[in-house]
Image 1 (cartoon, rainbow, N blue to C red):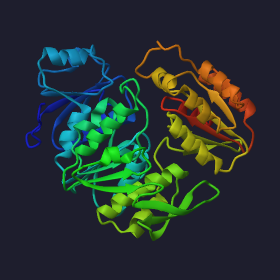
Image 2: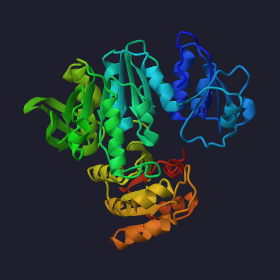
Image 3: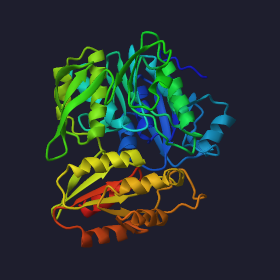
Image 4: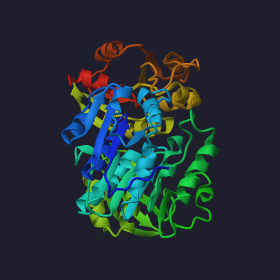
Length: 457
């Protein structure tokens, strides 16, 4: 693998520079004095920010974007092997790194690289940890998979030894990382277009845990099935949390907005009351993982708890978008059955007459793999509206459709409607939602546009 000498900045070209992670890494390199260029399909706030900081950004991917002075090319798993820039890089015999390999090398420049992994909750937990460190003046460098409101972005370049990043298991990318502290939030079936089965996924997380050095620490959810298979004989320290484990919650209460307050317990001892400004049991677990990490790096519980009480979430995570005719519109990124259950269960504690869930399935592979689980999870809503499947990187070769999913949901006794266009969905909602209803747009695609258009945004 090509090794970057960070003391000798070079010209690095990013294929897909507008991605939320790629743009962040490009910004870090610009700050280190590297020459950065890259390409993406269209202009965005992230690409405009990079251009303002000195990057050269091409819109449209062409072989001519790779100029003769490019020294290294970085690409993501989403880049097709026949991509013209990737082919040009091979022809020019340029060294290549994946996004994950580059991130792993950047992590080596910090004393305490921290990686947050898990099937669900990575962005929220990374954001919680980031907010705690920012409020405690730890001056971390941050690479987050969503927009953190307090920094109005996904990237922050600090001057301390702390580097905090998400660690995604897809294509085993997190196995290129070099963490000193790692968090495993949960392990479930997902990304079945890459992994063979749950055992394949668990094996990947085990290898991730093995990356930690002897003086490193793994913080892991004790509710993970057969957790000991992941932690057995690790050379690092292991801290557990969950509904049991070293850290766990007690005396949970919810306010009228579904925001919980709980007592943080450590090995049978009460440490203090924690109040959150984000909803749901899943966020209690995200918060406890964050608090365990904060205490590990010697941030006092009172300070960490105060930070969490002010943390109101990241973009597209139970994000209140506004009201239209006294109908509250919320948007959420949930695109896996477990995430859907968590979000809709949290919504049950939120003021509402009827919960409308407008769901856009994400990829044909995921829809097929979890078809029955999707149908069951969505019945937590009172009424469901389905948009067409968001294909992302796939084409439909599996015979999956939103109409099939709608039929399955109706068979379970929940009202469900399918429309092939956003315009039809918006018109239906305008005609059927009434004052006091809660409308949640949900999915990892572009379903957020439905709520924003209804709100006139």
